[in-house]
Length: 318
Image (cartoon, rainbow, N blue to C red; front, top):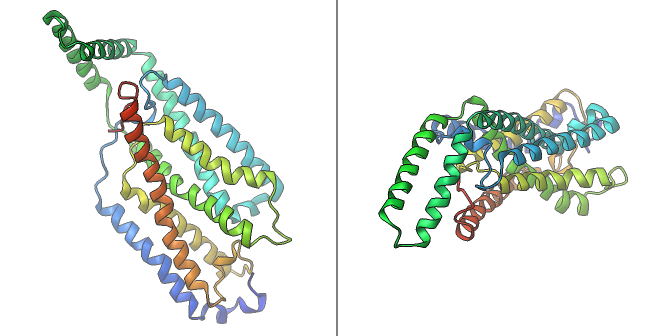
């Protein structure tokens, strides 16, 4: 916590301020350059709402996303009812809200996808017929030529149907993917900092762990991991830039508030008056890499493991 008498011009003329500003502004510039120069990979619209499990109806992922959206919104409402707008002074509530936005957007897109799919039942029937025939073909190398021709005909039919139904994701689809990957790094950063730094080392009489706070710093990552286990969204590395921007926007928000006269920092490691401030800021910048990397490895392990042990049931992202 900063001293009110030290929040004037002298506070911002400390040597720590420009050093800390450089630490979080440099990644911001690099992230913006990366976003502007890296060509985004094509994203199919059906990857947004179809599950990665062939025999799992997309209705189930719709139900799951709708449930998570409602439940997390209720938790956020409890926090806001308890603390008011002051709740959004913390990075946790920022990230928690972003996860809610992801599930809200996912619910709408899943509902639209299920509605579109319901109008084309022949696509699902052709798809199941193809899978059944292909599996039987792989089990027997001595199949008759008529059966082989049937499989080829089914493949052509399914390919033709996919060309008609599959289309590229639009603005909302790419926004959903960007929010998803931003949340992936942000929830791990939030929970790691909370459970391994704030709770053991920074707990005071004004901060005490309760059930609501524990749920917010646990269910955010649990719900997102469960969605990852169900969805078939790709996870390109360059979207790490959006995660960096998200954190830099929050730090900028805090600096603006303090420049306007606010004297209290929500997190002690953001305080600029201590000589250890640059080290704290540098550590926070570095920890973004393993946080995002861990989630990327989880997605990679999911694709490698499930496609190996469930080759006929699991669909890898494009």
